[in-house]
Length: 266
Image 1: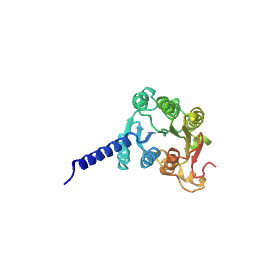
Image 2 (image 1 turned 90 degrees about the vertical axis):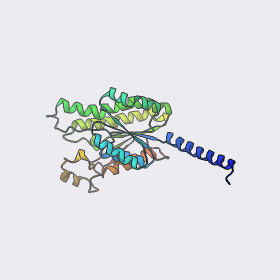
Image 3 (image 1 turned 120 degrees about the vertical axis):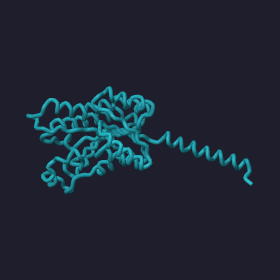
């Protein structure tokens, strides 16, 4: 015979277990990955999900890719919330992320958004210049302006900005892209000086030639001899460094630029 007291204790234990699980879910860390549906961004989102983060993933228009990324993230036991908007639109960024970020600020913010409109400067149109700067650099302002105050209020967080080797060395045919990525490096370094005392760590990762849709049209046969490791990078190579910057407990890296380029820029 099972005593009532034993049933009561078992019930209490069950309730306690459910409450504990609910507490853990409510307190699970959140990583906001801006531009996380494909390529480097997707690899970062998957790696952070594997490290125990729930993911907020933003993208602009490729619904199929975003849903596929969401499915893969959820297969790792994480939740994934999708936000579709154009980060070059400050109002759209506010509407998508303002309320939710204020209520539950992300623990990690990875700014990975970026587009290219390559052309020699002499032929570059105003539209090619504006679109790249608006997305790659102004988009950073739009996202930070929405999310940063809540992170400062919580006095915690890690911000990783994905720039590019092109932002460090400059590349012919990419004056607009190089300018935007160099601007991100300067912005991140300045931000690091502003928020470090609030326990928010800010760093930059600069990928080299990573095998993604963005680099498919590059003349890789000419680029490969310039890379000492003699291979092109994979999105996971970048994701591993971002994951380290976001998860390592003993962290004294702040305001730094970390190259992931196989030695292309030494």
